[in-house]
Length: 270
Image (cartoon, rainbow, N blue to C red; front, side, top):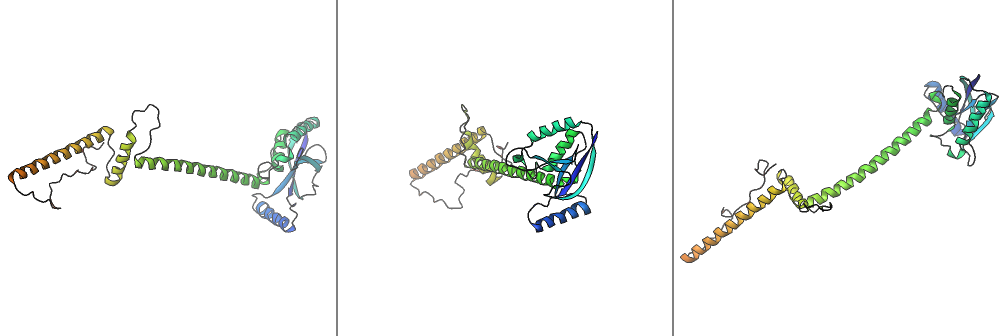
């Protein structure tokens, strides 16, 4: 059995002294004062004096080693003993060879696949506890925020598509001209009646009736109009025989037949 040691660095390789000082201050406040986390690089030491970590490169593996606690790219912070592995040095070398193949440098991602993620994976295979939460908390929070933002954008696009489709259907429904695209459907005239019902619902507050009731209403109105016309013709013939003058209709005359509007308490309501 041998100890597995985690080495932690402040990330100060930006090339700008001002930026590096800002990162140091962020780590000092959020890690040292609050205990929340910061911007850190990590590496794992097991069997020997070298530490193992992961970084970006265009070709080949991103796994590399250097003398423990002496990575020149970063500012050393501290070391943490994570536990002891029961694996032999031969088995540890085998694990490192596997990781070398599985972690190409071109797949490095600051939020989703960085050096801290690699150390987590390495420690898990060695059978010791993973990194303390504060080491990679900022990257995990950033990755989660990106995922939430992506899901939210997708849902907005999906809702917009559904809203546009619903608006088109509602518009055709209002016009009473929505085509019935079902093959072999015998109710091709139904959408026209639906449009009429919907307009009545908006203007008079009436509920839509069934297609049979609408047909009956149309027949009743037609019958009343025919009866009214026959009565008017008979009245004109009577005045003609008597040689009398036909009286003029005024605006306040009630001789015209009116079609009663649909109301909520109409007998034709559903």
